[in-house]
Image (tube, rainbow over all chains, first blue to last red; front, top):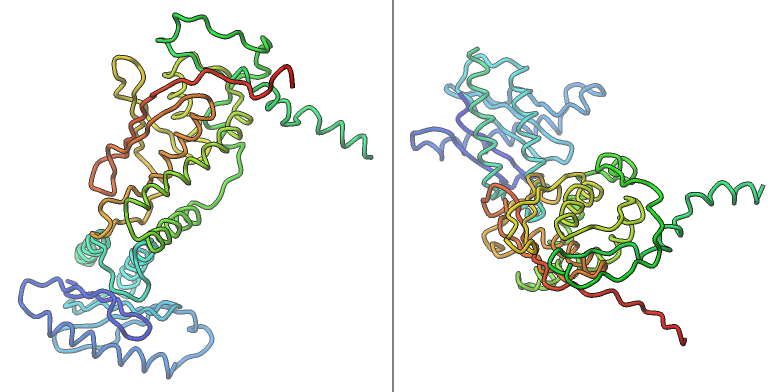
Length: 143
Length: 229
């Protein structure tokens, strides 16, 4: 199950942060997201491999903790997508698929002429769409 | 080489369409008591009207996202410049009017439509051919009043509003006001004064776009030229 998703701008400014848990642990999840940003920076500044991975947007598992796993995705405009999940074995393909849909939803949300680039995404339809993607991710891994 | 080229273009030269605007006249059923003015040219139409799909296929097209984003940027800029939502609505309507007055000529030149018998036929032509030609969608015409002078265009799909979500500060904005302006302008050019208002708007949570078109006055055709000039 995905417990939290986030969109972070290129100056590490939060654009969208949403947790999907009943319990009151939003702060903890936000902390996890925050810590993961450092991992992204590290990955980007010290690339292990060269040429073939240059255009790779999916960053893979960033930050495993006891309870959560954090996956990351970095667009070419340096916008970061993060996903915090409690699933222990997440298939790479599922995570990639999730980020692909998430990215598409983000692109549509910033295409709204009333959205100001670099500001938080206030769109309700974006929120609804992300919720749907998050829910379908859970069902996809079970099946 | 020059003469050959000239010959090849002459059959399709658009001037032939423009040279007979007098056949473009709409007679209202309520106006039938007075004798209709005799058409200047009794020549039958050269070709039959094209279908909406054929018309759409014959015009140049532009990427839908580019179009949507350009329109969004215009509305956004108007909001910044004019500050008042009401002013923006007026401005969009005026822009639409200016577009409509020009667009109607292109429509008539390319669609081969001839006289409409009444306002109902005019409305159908706009819904099935006009919308298809310029927006790639068709509208449905419904909710006629008893006199046949007021009707509604219902749009299920509106390419102007992809991605758009009205913020709370702009709830009064008629985002698609340019469309109503286009219809008003286009009909005015063919001597019909109309009032166009929006009744339903998906951006405000309705299930479709509906604009109400009311024919207020039919201006008899006046010819700008005089014999004694």
